[in-house]
Image (cartoon, rainbow, N blue to C red):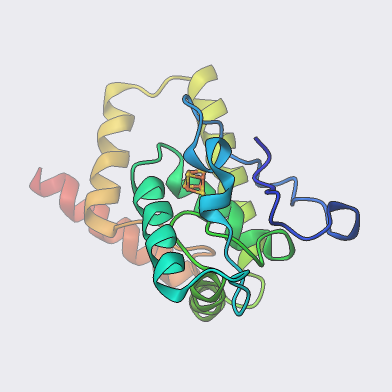
Length: 177
Ligand code: SF4
């Protein structure tokens, strides 16, 4: 599944999905594949459906997304592919909620937040590939685990001062361990 829906704008007029964020593979058919009409939603267009019926349908879609094995990746895909997801429920979010989430991402990571996410993904893939080629020794794995516990997730990019502070904390943690 590409993530595109029948309710998406005319596919001949929309941008291609960002190739840096492939739509996640689901081990089972997703509910939006088997019942796409449940996930249709465009602000101001209820196609004659009553407000109560729309709300009930959207609640069904949200519940389905909550149990979906790829909900996290689906949300990421929907957020970075704005032009492809301006209608419909994706990962239990409405178009308006996704707009708010994109604003928050821009506040947190800057206006180029999509590039930041893509770089993080790329770095993660490279680390995973390197780990497959050169498995960590027990001691290296212990240091990395300790670094995460002491310093938390790594923001990007780190300043030299942040790197030094992290090294100091790590050394203190190693001495105490
Ligand atoms: S999270 Fe929801 S919208 Fe996304 S693939 Fe799963 S069922 Fe579909």
